[in-house]
Amino acid sequence: MLNSIGIPGLIIILVIILIMFGPSKLPKLGRSIGESMKNFKDSTKGVLDEEEDSKKAEKM
Image (cartoon, rainbow, N blue to C red; front, side, top):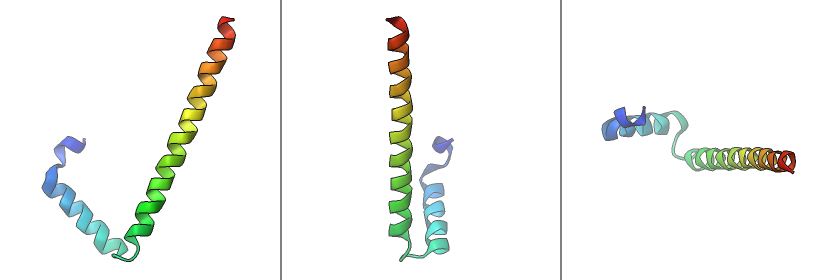
């Protein structure tokens, strides 16, 4: 999906985001998106680790 956007489309999307949120809120928006992605990644890693532990316990 992202391969079909291209550089011009990405620039247009970024300009629309800049217009919608304004330059003062973009750092806050980026920070919150980054924190959300980190939390999601940590939680999925925790679920996968629990699943691996349960599979190891079943083998024993």
